[in-house]
Length: 144
Image 1 (cartoon, rainbow, N blue to C red):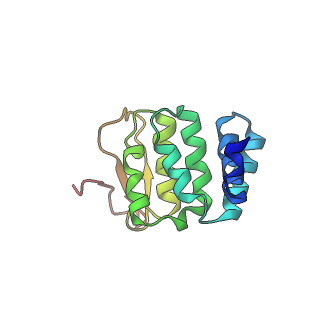
Image 2: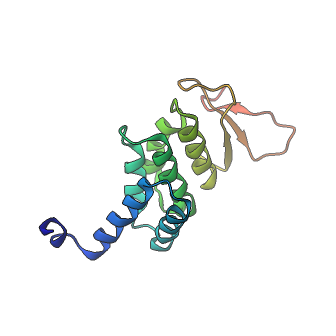
Image 3: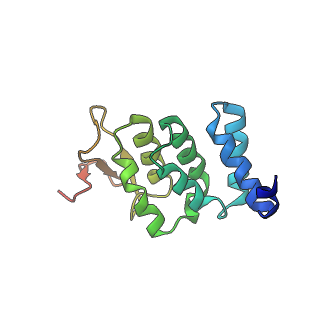
């Protein structure tokens, strides 16, 4: 119990929220995500850093990324760039959650929508669809 005595109340609240994301319980996850959304900027960086930890189960990582969507506007450019490895992750759930998050804040540097190709197995290139008139074709993230 002594370890909790040193933490501030907001830090303890965040600890409880992050423990809630470990559990596969839709109601509890939705409640934790709502609290994160109400806290705004406070949990953003930690949500992203927790999602980046390699020891996380893919479903846990996806839940953390999904919780970031409503508050993605609080991420700065460096936080957004940290998301890149997750967009190219080998696990489909993580890739999709990361692509959805990138789409939620308007892409990695402009207004665009990310879609993960159905045959993508990680390590390749991701197609970027600009929110432009439909006559323009998609371009690859690498600019080709």
